[in-house]
Image (cartoon, rainbow, N blue to C red; front, side, top):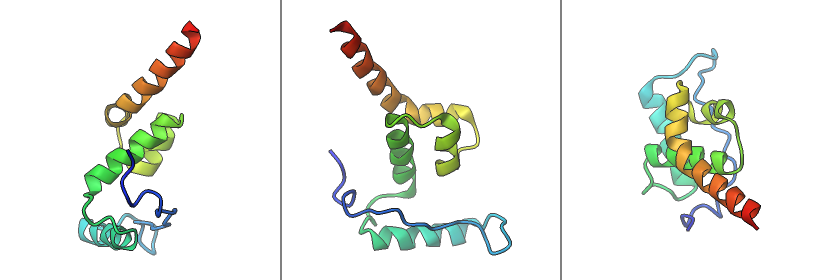
Length: 101
């Protein structure tokens, strides 16, 4: 089941890079994320949950670990695998069941 805000959510192009192209500090990034959460009426969802959901949904549609990391900001492959693992397992199970038929 998808959260209620999922259908209303469109790509919101918020970048956490400063004008100089360097990463911002935590407070600035957190404020930017909260702004987007308010826009999509998702204030009840924390940033970790949104990040986890993004990784899972990207994995479910077949994105590579590199693509997922580019979106979620994970710096290690093991973290991408941790968050994408369950979704990938479901995809593999569905594929395996199709092969049985």
